[in-house]
Image (cartoon, rainbow, N blue to C red; front, side, top):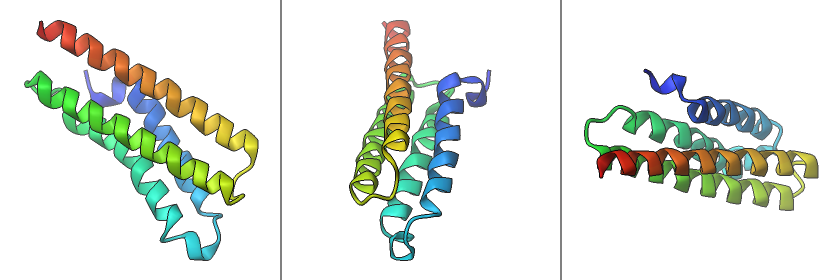
Length: 119
């Protein structure tokens, strides 16, 4: 099994691409501010999952999952800021928040199953 086989990884990867595309239409002065922060945090969620995947030390893998959760929370914050600045419409913010919350639940389930394997 590869990290790319995990549905949560696939979804986070797709979301990172969608967020990147979204930020490309932000005002120019936001390209290296909010846009950059959004691109980095959205990309870091699947990257952290990939980093920990398959590690023989379960605690390292669960730590990477925890970091991915933090990146999801950060991304949601930046998306809310972008919405507040009127850089994205309401239907987009609702879509992204819903998708990230679903991914967060999936990561929680993965972490929980790893902890059950460990004990």
